Image (tube, rainbow, N blue to C red):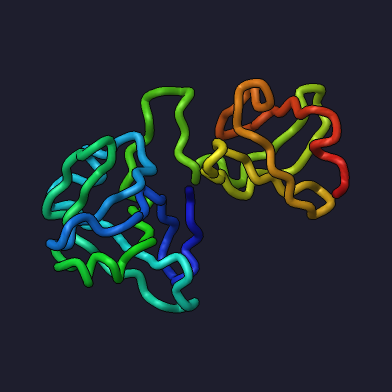
Length: 184
C-alpha cells in the first residue's frame, strides 16, 4: 500500500502493521506487507511509524528494529522505542513505513512497487480509455486497483491476471466482467 505524503514528506510504502502485543516485554506481532521482510525488518533498520487515525499534521515517529523473528507463522518485532506490554499495546495498529526514495528498482519486469503504478493510464483490452490508477489496495480478499475514471468515479478492479492481463509502468490494460465499470 502506498500512502500519500500528507505530512509534508515524500511518498512512503507500507511494509507492516502492528497487530497486537506478544508477551510482556514489548514484542509486537506484525502483519507483514512486503516481499522482503528480512531486509525491511533487519536489526538496526529505522522505520517510520504512523497511527492510522492520527490527526492531520501529526508527524510520523521513527522506530529502530532491535530484533525480529518468526514465531508460529508470524513476525515478532522488537523496537527500541517500545518497551513493556503497555508500550506495545499503545502502538496496536501502527503502520510501519519506508520512504519510496530508499527503494531499489526490481530486476523482475513483472514486479512493481505500488507507487510505480499510481498515475498509470488504464484502458480496456479493446483500446478504450478507462482512467488512471490512483492507488493499489491490499485487501483481505486480494489486491485491487483503484481506478479514477474519466468522469471522476472511482472503480475498484481486482488485480488478478484474468482482469488485468497487461501491466507496465506506462499502461495497464484491463478486461473487466460486464457491469464492473457501469455507473453505480
